[in-house]
Image (cartoon, rainbow, N blue to C red):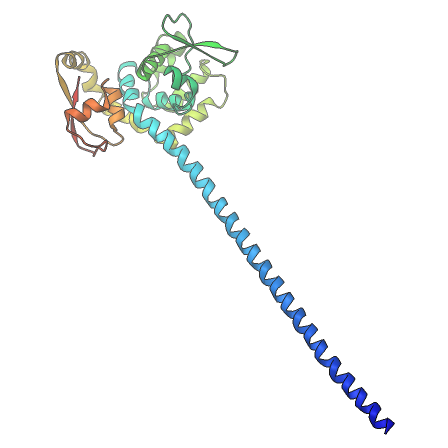
Length: 281
């Protein structure tokens, strides 16, 4: 009798222990699965955020810098070409210097004084601005318009004998001009020629030299007549070319965007290549 009772106790004890082990195992597995799942979700989210940051930043930076230079060139290309016709300085060199020395038109001297080439006072009797350069608060020339800065830059180069040899170079020899400016003492930066050449070739500024050269003969022979004709005429005609904007035309012809729009009944600032515009005085 006692033997049977002992057997029953052993069987009951074994049965009660079995389910408890199963429950522990089941709970352990569930906890492990949840932990693994949560870790995977967190890692995936971090990876996606990092990928987006890396892919977006370079695009914005690159596009921004390219647009700034192209916008500058579009505004001042015609002015540089006109100066090349009158002063024989390659338009590509003038534009590259303007981009480099004005900080793409965003430097303090360019914004506050329309001085795109950092020309200092040196006997200047006009308006002045003071700016830290080689020394603290140096005197720089201040212009009413950016065109005056471009014209003064051309006169600065043509009026000094140390640059005279540059005008013996071919009109499209921008590399010779870049190296010659540095050799004549225009800039102390040893890499100045390479910087100019890099800008000219990257943005194909040499094409403006070719445009002037291709029309040099007619322009030079009739330069006085053209100037006199403009004074007597009440309006001029302009055929829109690639890169022209209402703003650049207003600066070129010394008028305003609103005046051009009113003269041509334009409702927007958009222009198309080949479009004929009447430019008011």
